[in-house]
Amino acid sequence: MNKKIKVLIVDDSAVVRKILSSALSKYPDIEIVGTAPDPFIARNKIIQFKPDVLTLDVEMPRMDGITFLRKLMTHYPIPTIMVSSLTQEGCDATLKALEVGAIDFVAKPTSRLGSDVGDVIDELHTKIKHASRANIRALHNPAGNSNNNNKSGRTVQPKTGIPDNGQESRQNYTVFKGTHKIILIGASTGGTEALKEVLIRMPPNSPAIAIVQHMPEMFTKAFADRLDSLCAISVKEGKHGDRLIPGQAIIAPGNYHMGIKKCGAMYKVEMEQGPPIHHQRPAVDVLFDSAAKYVGPNAIGVLMTGMGDDGATGLLKMKKSGAGTIAQDEDSCVVFGMPKEAIKLGAADKIVSLHNIPNNIISLVNK
Image (spheres, rainbow, N blue to C red):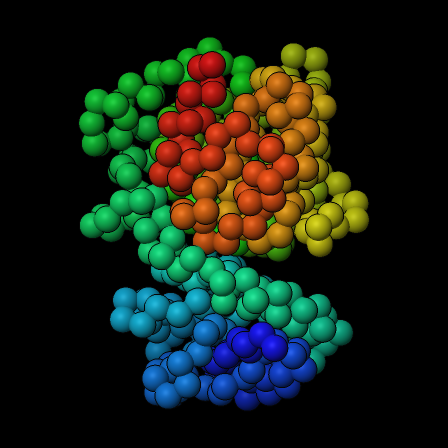
């Protein structure tokens, strides 16, 4: 019999602690070793029970979840899944938690005793399983660097595109001029920080970029706004009919599939709410399939960290259509699921670390 995953639940609500504890205990691969109403009690139970995975509320008394998570990741790193409210404040706090070191998050049910509790529990169970096997080192050093506060290989002045660390970076800011390529990126677990590491290194004259990151509604808007404040390119949550233009990245909105359509000499994104694919909406395969059909050899596909196999067959279709394709390597992935499946299919021209993805994109653009 496989070893059970030891889980500690940290939430200030007794109701939520009871619901999560009772529901997760029904899974044969989960052992709830304890619950805690605040970080101080959680700290003692972590030392006592040595859990494999933590679920953590963002808003708690005595010490908020972000402060606790930061201390935890510094002194006693444990794969952590945030349980987040669907509010603007909850979205912003969750993105900060992912930046600090959380593996993933689930949105709290709209009603704590509502009909969507079962869906949240199923999602949480899946994410706990993947978190227990996650490469937590990749979260602490996503771009393969050390001793830098923003975890990136360079510092970029937002919307100026001027990097501050050397001649090679400045040369990279001229190579995209006049290109008609389109960059398509898919990511899931661990992808928010990984995408940041790639996008902050893209110059303002970068080819158009379209992104699917598995995220629910509301979170994608907050995520896009966060990236837009950090990057030299513009980043926005996509809307139906948006044009793909150089210097801009469009992120698929939560709960909508995003595909590409050719309109004369330009490309636009289309949003639709078809059935989930690989249990996801948006799904990476929808984006990649449309790129294979409409963009062909002018596309570059990048499949990054994430659980499951979404994007693998789409990346293969892109490769067969003449596109350049990249998969993130195992060592730099938080969860080596989606890239692994693509690699198994032979869909990736290049298998590279997160740190080397931007330069490999440049190489394929110039090919």
